[in-house]
Length: 113
Length: 113
Image (cartoon, rainbow over all chains, first blue to last red; front, side, top):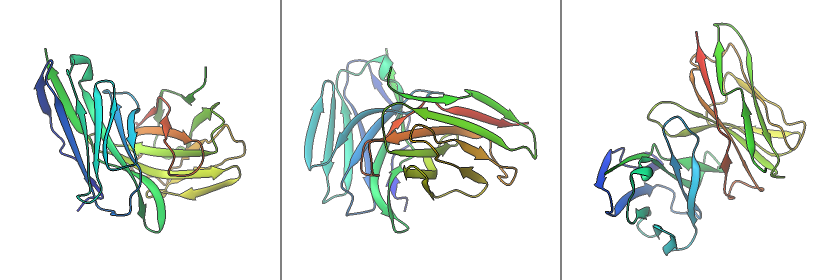
């Protein structure tokens, strides 16, 4: 099992719909969780971080965290073609005795006009 | 403008050559990181540094070396011992420890000829 797992996609949604991106992680002791957006050929840019169970909203984005089930999700409301990108989930976890940010492989989102 | 800069944007290396990738930040961050990204994969940690004059190996440090002589700078050398260096290299920084949010530079794309 990968430490941070994401469906590679592509996830295709029509413009204006809600896109739901999911991520599961292996370390039950993880405390901080991040979503990054990466356009093709570019570096990742931070969208949101979440530390506590529940929902955290920022504009059209909502991060949801469920530590008991070890998953974190990102909802994008009113999806736009400009949201088409790869979304990376990152989890701060202990691997090989040290705490480090561990990234999933990313989910590619395509928003159809 | 505050941020992280990486140079060059593109780099070509011949077999047997060492090359150095530059990373500079003016965010006054203590911690800096180097990641490697291969097509369709997540980010893998090469080296990280939490304070000046100290750095630690990440998951894939073999064939790479770093230095941290100044807070602002964290150059990465890809040595001839790295057998498959063609990849996208990303530098990141965070305020302090590994639990903090990491911000990325624009990246350097290295190709071996």
